[in-house]
Image (tube, rainbow, N blue to C red; front, side, top):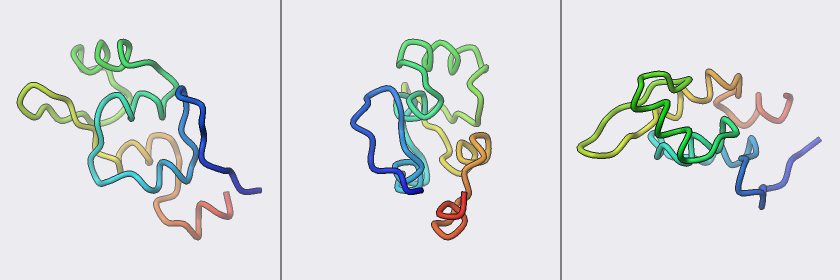
Length: 83
């Protein structure tokens, strides 16, 4: 079963996740975990975000590979298609 790109602002599909750059913003990462931007920022500020967050100047960035690992999403398309 394949999943189409989501139009739901609260979630991301596996395809959406696999097409993210190596590092993404905290709001996009929050959507992947099913949370809004306020909660994502709160968790990042308190060092409780579910995956690695890097502080760059005044913004937060999330390492996509670590986010995929936490979400148990295979990093290559062949494995994702089998999931």
